Length: 166
Image (tube, rainbow, N blue to C red):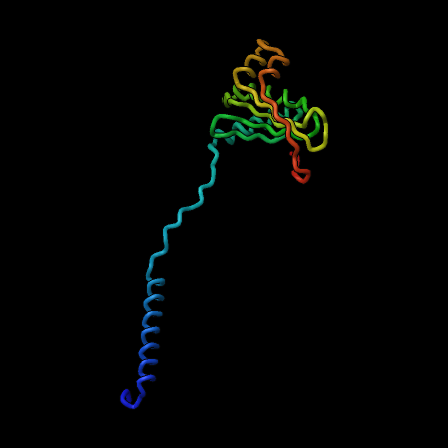
């Protein structure tokens, strides 16, 4: 049978055979190559104490009749994001950060409070950042509100209008 084929037909058959062999080797390599090890995506986890401290902070805020969210960070800081339209709720949040130490949480440093801006312009927010030592001195009456305010960092920003408010 081979001898009855022309040289051109023989070359085509040899080429097709080599192409088939190459295809089988490539496919076999893909099938037999082990899948790369996939590492799971790390998800941040909170310790049970951090969860408990957030719960305590939420209760204390509620006792002060303030609505908001609390985040406790692994770097030792805490952040209160206060809802509503009363910027004076920042003082309640600072008081809560002190009360938390009496319940086994903290102290946290720095303490950040995100409240509606005192200008009451829509979607304008104020972030107050205070150091623990200053908040403690304030809570003990060693410094007054004005002194604590002077020692705190303040930053205003405009929130995107579609952002949900706590």
